[in-house]
Length: 303
Figure 1 (cartoon, rainbow, N blue to C red):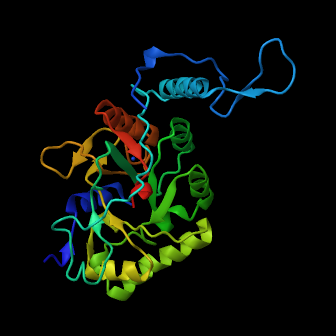
Figure 2 (tube, rainbow, N blue to C red; figure 1 turned 120 degrees about the horizontal axis):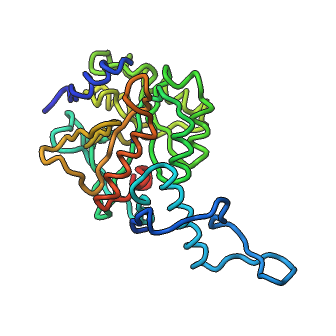
Figure 3 (cartoon, helix red, strand yellow; figure 1 turned 30 degrees about the vertical axis):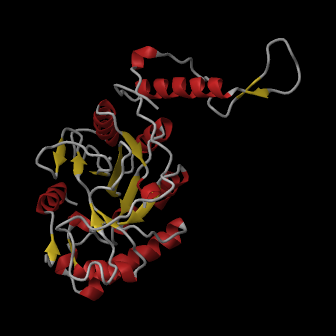
């Protein structure tokens, strides 16, 4: 049984950094500036009186046209696919084989997993730490209606909690990534607990809720990590199966392909660390997953 589970490649990379309905081609439709969204109303031509709601088909057409325009504006090849409704029966989440710790099951420790078991052709976008706070990224993802989950470390977000409050107000989920992003297996149990529970307290104070989802920094953990996480109110400890950068992808699996339910990692980074912006990173991510027929779903909808 593995006492310490590591992701050395990601750990090395982080040190280097010092411290993301059917497809439609963009040529298929156009939209005049200011076109009505799905909640708009229409008044019949030549009549006074109250405006009448658009019929469902008109609302869908208007929303599709809006998304086509947004995809063009952000430089995407296609409109991102719409995910299916959240599953009525949530999948059973267990630790990935080889990622368990001693007493994983009998102590009911939070499972570490890289893929959610689902038949839906979806992937989940997760973004770590909080170093870069790009307002264009918020606007892009809101306009395109692409959900994501942020895993935050306090030492990187405390200079601008308001940025992440806005992110949350747009329907995205904020989760725990420790106070200071340490290599947790190198700490004592009490030190690990301070890192995780301390971030829980920050999340509750700043964002109104202590999360039940936690990602260990660098994807590194041991039994103490998961015991401490459980004590702090954590139920799940997802890591990732792919990682996207502004200029390339990296894969955990040898065949280097996406799978249904895969968790994709990226980081809050900008030109100080990458040859590009978070918008560039999201463009690479969305173009690939859409081209391969995947929608981006909200991770918490499946937990």
